[in-house]
Image (cartoon, rainbow, N blue to C red; front, side):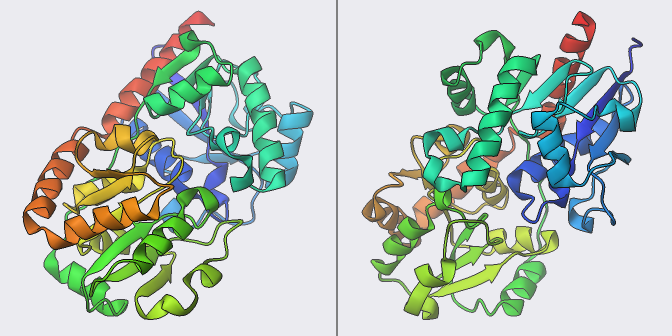
Length: 368
């Protein structure tokens, strides 16, 4: 092994219908690693007819295995084949960046973003639960080190059977996208956001607690709108949840990356009352724009916010409504949360994530 490590990194989730925060985190740390001279990343993915969508395209060359995604996942989890090195050639380390766990033909570093399926299986599809549980079984057996983005996820991993000695805290980073007033006005005009608005972003799925947010919103007397941004996921009927309240709720769906920073920057409040998170990137994304944040206690977002947000009980719509109302009605509180949020977000960077990730690569490679 030379000082420059050769690492195979999985990027298959960049082709998923809903890449989500897992892909955002993978691309963030991969971009930072790609700027370094002491590691060579080679991407790995299933067979595809086209590159990943432009906004989800990996920053390094990607080699493709001969099977399409579903067949590859099934083969990896049931047959433990094909090896990623069939596509990449010899590598010092395999970095599985999500729960699909490839066969161990080299030391394996695995990122576990969360174990939400163990907390509430009803929040996932039957197929999803089966897939994640098999991945967890393989991770316990084959992962040399497990990278966790929060202490909350580390605790969940220990409860799931991982020895503390294989767990490493590697927080995600966040990028600061400077936004001009002109950009904010452009996005507001494009989406008809004439009034002040409270923002939520994410994949529409049960653990994001949209029903609780919408119940809270229905009890608030305000001239603001509630703006929902993100792709449809699973097990949640957003149209049915919104129902006849559309005059106060705007459902924008998936937005391109260039619109996300302005939509955060233009919001009066960002509300993210999830039941379970492994990290909570949207909280930091809002904070970088100086948007006051309301988020959940009892999950990783409390840890990530660390005093820079109002915390609510996600199971109590009254708690959510009161916190939103406090920020909307108190300019001094909103300003203080904005200041704290910017300072808190500045402590997270993808370069730091990359440094900690590289340390994990070296640790397992040198033991080989």
